[in-house]
Length: 474
Image (cartoon, rainbow, N blue to C red; front, top):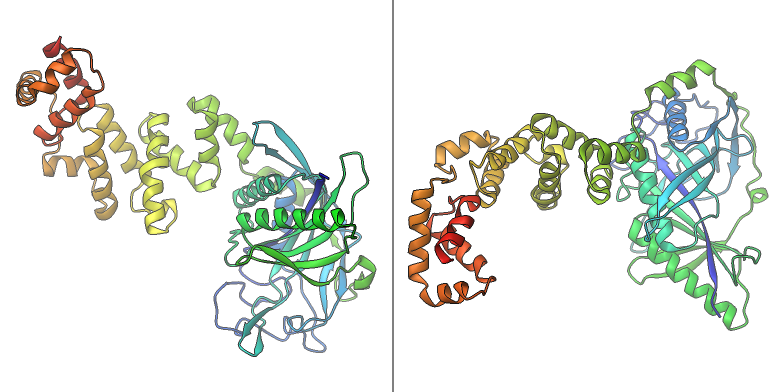
């Protein structure tokens, strides 16, 4: 029997504020264990939390970017549970009155159509600490305790693992655009809980859900959901019942395993936090943030296609990371050939980023220098192959592309008389291939172009060589 999966995602996003949510401890990742702590985030008796205003600002920015309604009044609550990395034995969160509600994201499906995924709420909460498991023991690092989180809860609108992955990727891009988090999943800045259930068809009631906890990569979310769907199908097909529970995904084995029974809201005994007053937002505060909002990915995608004449695929790549679009527009401003600039970014520049494991603005080649390489090609001064050499040297040395071309004598040869002599020389050296080419074996053109480039030490202008080759073999 076949089933339809029903998926909702709860995404925990660490905000990139300088300090924690309720104290002045550093919010920087990577410090020695238990060094970015104080009595407040350690939950010592008698201490009082003081809300970081930036946390509210960042959450509202995210809410606006995700098409949410912003509450003028929201309330903090205590979420009670016992765990070794939670010093107070409760987590300060929001429950009945979250700061953002009723938003949505539009995602693109594999067939090119769009689907709207509802966002139930975004609420603010503090993060817990982290357990580091070693042989025979577990160590508690409380540096992460008090890190400001926004929890973004989707509606159960997703119907496949692929849709879930597309939603997460789009969400990550939007949050990076509004600069509220680095969304580094490897460092835990963005973590996902996936709620998965199945039902016989789209008209049936939702089934009992299992929650897959703390998955930290797009690929693993996709894998975990697919496994969980198959597991639940097997249980039902064998006459069993799905149990509401929390499960963990093992990335090494590719399976989910039961962790504990899934709590309901009443298990957490939520109640308003007596140490924190409600958050009350003035209209001006919200209006100022609306005015600040940058151009978001969907709007940028449409503009890149209309203004620069890019294909949907090219534009989609450039808006997939905010820095890519910024780099592209700076390069096009220096030399107006959008398609060629895009090709170089997607090709040679991405190759260098992968090799160096760096960001686009750390790759060693400025947008202006990349644009200069494209300009040198467009002016016929260097070939595509020479351009790749120039690109590598520019990236390594920081020298101007034009200076490298001049210093090394890399200017492309467009002299017809000189090139005609080289073409004749190559034809004479390959009589059998020449006769076959004259006889209509057009695929040999690539062979001859290669030989001509070799004979000219890579400097022959292909645009001049091609008609000469045709003339001399007709």
